[in-house]
Length: 534
Image (cartoon, rainbow, N blue to C red; front, side, top):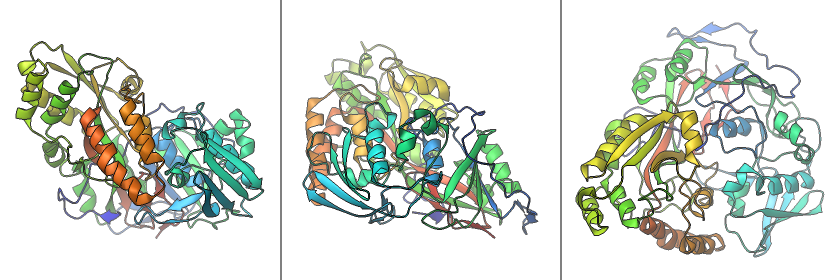
């Protein structure tokens, strides 16, 4: 869904953050192994009719709202800014149209199951990596086994490691380590960036710089900016704009000003208050994109009283999500009614999903033995400020919701780096606000890290959940798998109440009106190879 925003309606738009569970700290002095800095800054600038000075038509300048890590190994993180940066350089094996969810060839030209557990892929010939080496089956084997390895951060997206058999130079057989069928395998192959086997064999080389097969190569990284230039030997052909600069700028007002003056062509995470400014400027546009991200309130199970199901359920019924979306997010929100975003394959509204009912919340507390919250310890609600949007405002509102049913809740807003440290720890607080933006439309990209034992954030362990997730993951019939998700997995998640989904998030981009061909994706990555500046 890519639209120019004209009028705000609650039913039409979703939350304004495009975020990830990790907001790592970048090293602004790291330089990649590229050959030279991206150029394109020597052409004369032009002034548009509304006063915005358009920069060189040879160079596209994009401002990131999140810092880069300075480690360019795609398996070393789940950080959103890094995923965006990788999307510009790398290809995947299979392409999924994020609007229709239809599949088409990318680096794999065809694929078929040769038995229930083994997917055979035929690979594209004549493809080169940006270092000049040839792409073949060994690169696919190394990529998938590295990406799913328990030694890689990206293992969080996989239920188990992948094993790849090289049949010949351009044919591979892919299966899961346990040899059992995995229904999500094809969808997973739509999001894994294909790396060079030689790079994977040399960790220092892998982390030093991107080396993909995509339309742009990264030349260097300095001053919080990744410099890209066209990869002339790309199998897809040359991109329409020769150079791209992707720069981290933390402050949203600074990003806005840069777009208005023409210093930037595209900016991420426009604030809701800034939308009208851009809409009223003839030289700028606003593009919105409902994303795969879902914002949650996570319970830390090793901290009392989060191990008590009735208390967790009381909290879930005490939160007024409608007001958060309609008022605090100013309509930029889609109230959650499932444990995956509505953009994800297999999404289905959950019948027993908790809705705002403070009286029921009080009844649940009384049933748990804590009438009006009496006897419960003080609880801490932690959230980040400076990365996700409006977290302080809606965090204060949720805290008031919980206090209204008798809970003694302390609101604890912290800087992003502190929050990042606390997010994965078992006992830093009672509950913590956060999100997860899967890099693809496969539901297991969300279900595996959060709900397989132990939960990534909550540390919740539950054999019943593990069993039903195994069941859905092994069902190769797509319609039957959807039924298992809708009728067994999602309702059980609501029953266990491991966390509270709050709302689906939305990316809001500011774009110069002279920029044509920019495509935003539900994963919050974007396509720029077809962008031209008029």
